Length: 181
Image (cartoon, rainbow, N blue to C red; front, top):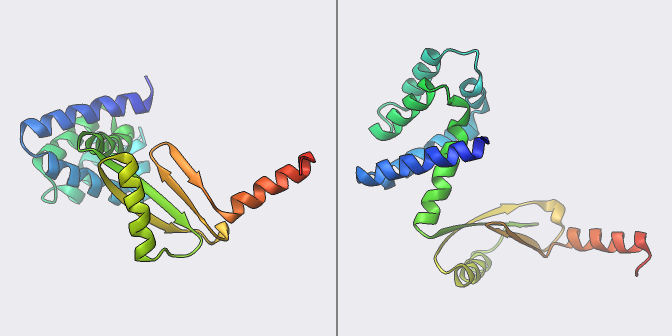
């Protein structure tokens, strides 16, 4: 069974449990905090994934880092995963939890990458367009990539709109190489 399938099943279980315990929002915040922590410290991902490191050591690390800062459901979930030897899927499970939470709450994640920082007016316009198309709440993340030269790349779910000058130049170069211009 693939890691994503396993993670999706565990994420669904923790969502169901947190809904039963009326702690869904708090557990979602815990999972987002956990993901931010792991992204900031990639060594922690390596430790959790390493089968040579004992379960007790992994539990001690997670307890030291998160006990008292997270809901008891989240802590119990981490302990269960480590004790079952599933430390390597903790990151993917937390990520999948956030994805399933967003689906449950009709939240769409969107990312816009532009050559220069977008003005608030441009962000608002893009956000309004995505909201109209998605039909729900949208969380827009704006990033800057000077290599785009101009324009932007908008990613919403599995769809992408690329209006960047760099992409247009690449297409033009390809057309010249094929002799179709």
